[in-house]
Image (tube, rainbow, N blue to C red; front, side, top):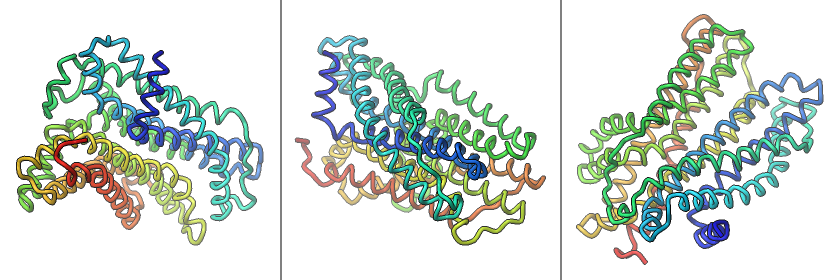
Length: 437
């Protein structure tokens, strides 16, 4: 009965589940496709030289997939908290709500995993062609269809989705039956104690890994540095609402001076709902941190060895990390759209008291830019810590090579994605009728 109800909910409200569906599809495609490349290269001795890079790329893709899927499912469940409160008010028990949320996640995960597995082989073929084009694997990487990559992908697609939904469901059932009648924008508690503890432990663990980078063998330095970046991203995301409330207030101060009305609206939204804003800032942080660490770690290693990459070989690192970065950029668009879309009633209320559509558009743009800036600052700080340690391991000094054009381009892509997601998802509320259909 629960599965039937869940299927009907997904079928009739497919637009509400679209972002989660896309996130799981891309996650399964990346994990299984990367696994197919690793499996294909493992059986050929002439490809041993690129096995390390392929494995690192697959690990990064796997981490990004878990991070994005978990965040997207949590955001999807929590943005429906008023619906869960309404169900509780008509007699549904907390256990029934949890089962319904889990069943909806299962329906989405099964459908998305099937699509992702179907796309894995074409994706692996495209990546193999790129590797041959950039002369990283002149003879090409054979794509061998084996079961292990698909099993790992299903773990990401099914298990991670269900676990994320289950954790979010515990928060959803905390919504009392009368919560549906209350519409306070301010969050009563910034974060739970378990989340705070996870953040502190992750930051401490990431700090230990950064310290270990210069101590380990040279061949293990880059994997350890990437591991430090991943763990620090988890910690920063967990503690992010606290950071965003403070950093957002500081970054929004010049905005309030430049554009008082729209700036005050943007700053108020950031201060009253830092967790919602952090859901959009986390993908930006992840994009900047992982992309910069991967790209500039290769640049630092090349500079320390006196190697200058030109022509097709210069595209090796961008190609290997490109899919994961594209995924995180899509997640920036999705997360911003989802977090902004739930504010339709708030936007209509502001319009009803005289706020002009142009002011609302500017407020949303300023808010999106401040969120992007906060995510960029966090991601840059994480990348700098890992890269400085990698530079010390390679040269003995706290130094690393970087490309400002690549960094600026990465930030601009995130900023544009956030602006597009926010403006498109709120267009109806800003310009449509004041009373929702």
